[in-house]
Image (cartoon, rainbow, N blue to C red; front, side, top):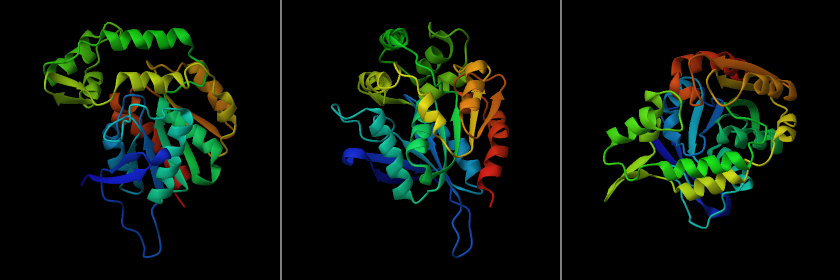
Length: 286
């Protein structure tokens, strides 16, 4: 069962939230603990489907297509600010009745999660940060992303071409990774001239520029709930920075996933589950 639930985000934006399995049965006056899953830049809720399904064995797990992504609205002149993304996630928690929830975020979604946890501690009982840095990445990083988007050979003739380019041929990636090819195949849609992303690259760059120049340690230190920092050994979050994040978090814990890159939960889904499930058990078990 896959079910779409519409959410009204900041500014009246229509957002698509997704339940990938029925929630567990509980007593008449009980509700299973809530979990909200937030994808990263260019991602979509479906990237969380395997995680959401095993979570739904015991919890109410919902994944959100964030503004500009997936099947949520993508207004050309819309607000793609940090505040808008945070307000959207806050609205989702309240409208879906998930709070107090565990927030699980990947990359940009993890930043949104910890900023919301700092802003509204009453809505968040636990936090999982997947491969997102707290330090500033800077102007050079943003220029690299602009160049990377321009290098995409759009449109792709077939989904097989999408999988091959992102999984094997992308010159910006050191090693082939078939899971990466599958990841990007999920964010493509067929158009008249071939396959193109469901998002607008310009909006992705606009979203990114609202956080890439700043460090985010201050908000991290304001997170009062238990928090788990997860990194892939070959991901973008280095061990030294991840351990400093754990130190800065008032109730921080650490986990790493071997043979995983930046797309930790997508690269190694079973190892990802093994890394995060003990933390979830501790936070969500009454």
